[in-house]
Length: 393
Ligand code: ARG
Image (cartoon, rainbow, N blue to C red):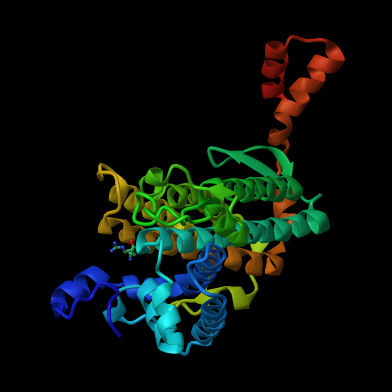
């Protein structure tokens, strides 16, 4: 397998390993999307008269077969190929010969990688929003079945006022739905079709129809002007990682509450044995490691965002190979938050709440503000006077 730009001059092995690095392996996630974008590009080339009907049909059949074989795990992007775009074109040419060698007309790997990444990102944003909704639904179920259970509300980790389990669960459910809305809104920047911008300065000579690939791939519009496309690389990814980081924060705070509630001192929740881990030394222990790790992983998406922003910061305009370094933190950040969300949606239904312990923690002092408000309403006292009297009762 050769690289698309090879001119029979051997590439230094260390340079290949350094430049293609992990990128070829990361690109395995993009293969299905590159197949889709390549099919749309071929359809456009055919409609514009640059690819015959027969070549087009052969290319479409081969793309489907190559994509399906990849999905079955029958091939992977090899280091020698650098990236998924090269791997795909190599296989296409091997399958259909001359027709495969016509497909790269009017495009560059620079717009190709953006098309595949944006298709990937749109899918992942929807999937992660769905996972946030899944955790919210598990909290809804808790609120519905045991929402009336009384428990203390805390400020400064001190008991403040009575609240209910429904109030606690409903708060997290609402914020997780807000995170899902944020993730859905982050789609905007990923919804622009980069195809047709080619290396970053458009396509000379040819009359390409960008609206055809825009429609075929379900993008909201073509990204204009073509010179802005490479400048935008990383922005859709950064917006998405920011929203993912906010979701991670809410999942981490939910997990932090559950760690606290599972202590003997609180005793509000009991975790079934299957959800806990043991101690190698202390036979009596069952630990809430799963919630600790969700809490501990809160920083991963934020760290990924910082890494990504450092790649594009101060970079001159146009394409630079640095830009491929965005993929790794992007995938890592999304994987992290998605794993935490799926774990919590899985674990929440198994949690038991101890009604007596929760109610027992609501001592009469927590109703002091309530007593003061009654004195205001029933006796007409100024609030400050009622506040003073409520302290004494
Ligand atoms: N792996 C590359 C990336 O993610 C693909 C584009 C390569 N383009 C190039 N001109 N070398 O940016």
